[in-house]
Image 1 (cartoon, rainbow, N blue to C red):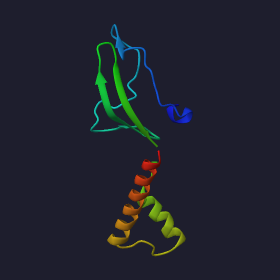
Image 2: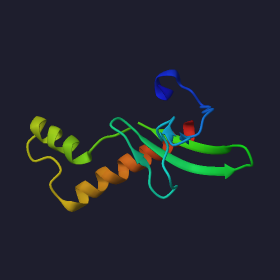
Image 3: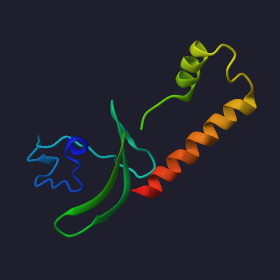
Image 4: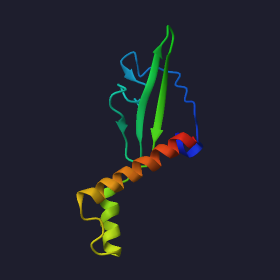
Amino acid sequence: MVLENNSNVIVMITREIEDGITKCHRYWPISNKKPLELKNCQIFLENYQILQYFIIRILQVVRKSFNIRNIVAQMREQRYGMIQTKEQYYFCYKTVLEVLQKLVTFH
């Protein structure tokens, strides 16, 4: 829903558990060391601040899921013998990394 509506603020006005009853399921990662892995995206906890009456969490939702190995396999179906050496794989990964870094700077 956040991605569909291009939302940049989510307000949760309940606790996860109140009087022993689950009121809200956690949709954010517990730690900034490991993202929450969902089917179509990852959610990263970039920062948080605990205040007296509420908690502010800065999240990053990332969708751009792909597997270079699968992409290479598809390319090989179209052109036999494409990308066979370690150096060629390295070039693919490096190129994808550079493109992703440039996309991040545009936002």
